[in-house]
Length: 325
Length: 157
Image (cartoon, rainbow over all chains, first blue to last red; front, side):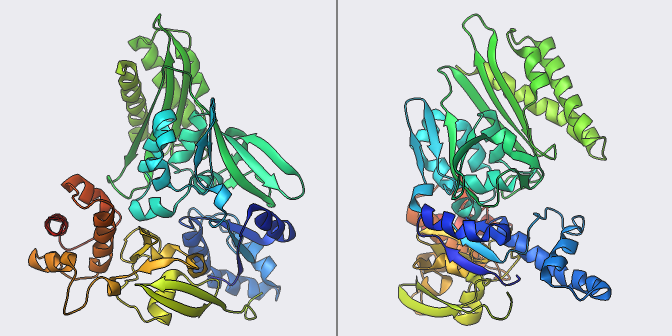
């Protein structure tokens, strides 16, 4: 890893002050399960990049960084800024951790680990979708370190918890020294793979989620190459509300790991909204969802496999939710 | 911003002993354990959290030492394989691994034992599924896992 200075924030204010002065060159670290491999991979390719740039100019490191950042295909999954001058540790900020609830909403601290999410009584009772998604991440060691905030702000296409947060219409509470607090829907924060609209001087201080209205059901399913410690090939988060007359009054479908940036499948949702979930409609919805996905990703070698599978996962999950009482 | 970065003093407790070591900000906990403190029982494998060979217990939880910046371990309590037993008095898990033939090449063993230890601390009578889940972050390319699972199950009894 290339050198950087390290600071462990003792409080949110300390963190915000540190960041405000160094925003451009500072990377925030929490669990580090994404950042550390990214910094290490960037380092492996650095010497190659340096040789090339030396032939052109004897410029300083910042230019090397720019050239390096252009080589996105050399390092798969490379976040944009992998050569920070400063790294700010936010894991010791007490107020950024844990799950709390009010009458109608749940607040999750960004450095709450996946293990803590799985053990949270509030989440088990109010938002079991998040418990399911968190328990599908990596292995125990990763779940003991990796955090919900990191899963969101990394915005990796293969993220497991992020699609569930989208299905729950989560909001991000962002803090900066300059602008104070702002609230941003998660869906609006996601710009491109590994990129969000969160400003360089902002710290994510909370994930805010409204409780689901009584009777609302939710489900999560993940498909990987193996059962444990696996990167999602595909996941599906669904939130559903069925009225007494059998019609669907709320439906949110978020497939994971099939698109560059996760998002709601509103076309597929609309087919079923206000209707009774009869088989032909479910088929139409699944077909439209697959079409919408492959319109975004284009046809690839894997499409022939993914197309039926994404439809079947959705249909199976929906069927399961319709049977739940 | 390169050579002039100074080392910082890292204080932590390792296997019950207070330790002080000067570290660079870029060093991982794994590097400090192996290279600075010469605790080489913790293995370096994939260095990206996929293999679990570097598993140690930090504040009671199994973690990958390769994914933790050393300075993030400031003031933490770390348990490594060196603290598990002594050659004269092996830990029951170590005894059980030997008795059940759960060690072949040995590279994954320290990580497996630390994951097993973290499990038994939280749940002294795990069932097979719970054992499988607890070692799901540790890869073994020799044993096929069955003997490791048996060894942990027998050690818990």
